[in-house]
Length: 246
Image (cartoon, rainbow, N blue to C red):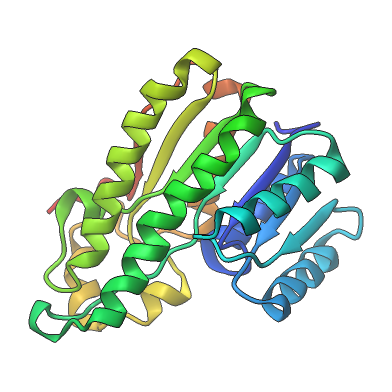
């Protein structure tokens, strides 16, 4: 579905981001994964190569809020592959902190990674995607719609991602650039495993399909939205949550 396409994916060394990278590679894309440090990027590339030694995958670890570092990476990808078609903003951190327990450091970390980095990566990507009429995809969350009982900065940050997605879709439509988001429900990732059971169990009970999602469930949505099958879809926040409702 993505043969000949070139994708950059943030937060791609584990969980949903890693599965998106693997799914894109399985569908014949060339992929650049971005992670937080060299060892996690190298480990993810090695793991992907174990799946298929022919996968065309490279990786870097820029600071996602630093426009100069991002541009260096985008230029390296452009030099190696000749173009950039797809940019996935997947990097993010969760939170279960009660409002009175937040400190300035945690507030800044959440805002920087979940909001500012999405903005900066998208801003950096636009000149490259103009040339290919490319795609920006963002990772939102079902809690941006339903909320959650603590850790309020996480759903707040994902609501900001939704707003960015819808507005940027309008702004970039004249260039043929599509912008969409995927809002996963509860998914089998390290991030979810770190959340307290009292937060997760009631949410699982609200899912009519009776199970939590897998990273592959989410990656398939990212595959569809990145492909030409979704060529007339932009400004959408696609819920992939087993029909969970609050």
